[in-house]
Length: 173
Image (cartoon, rainbow, N blue to C red; front, side, top):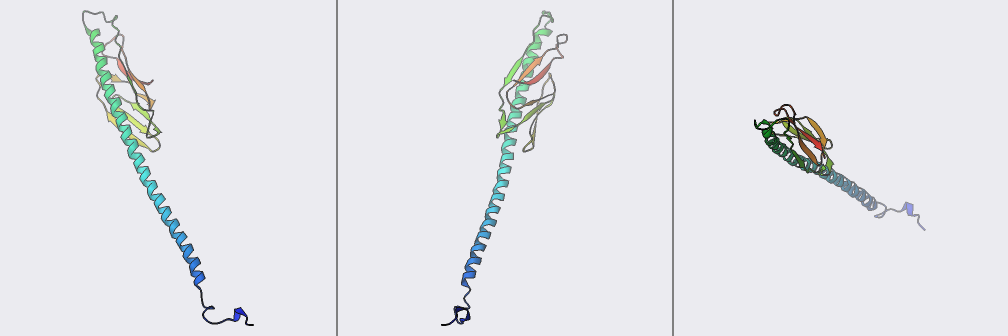
């Protein structure tokens, strides 16, 4: 009987089993690289979509609050108009005005903060870091305030001695 290790001929030089194994490993490696590329590519798209959604929502929130501040300004000036009437005693006048604004607590599932100044409404998130500034015009002074996103109240705080020195205050509700 012949020893198989000493065989010569076509079976001894056959290395197709190695090429099957190498082909299988290469297929797995290429698949892993392609899958990683897809995951990284889709992750970037999701991040940019989230940024755009958050920016859009914050813009809407800022514009709504700015419009409501301007509306509260008009109400405050109307409330003060009675105090400057010469037929009324300024001490007896009760100038009040308040506007409740229902803002969402989160935008795109992310909490945000609101900063109000005499000229702008600044709405921001920290993750992703997005800042939106919306200008507003108010004849009445707007007190600087920072609050969390959500329902707020814009209230007129009259100056009891001078009808022209009252201010608007934005607070959480």
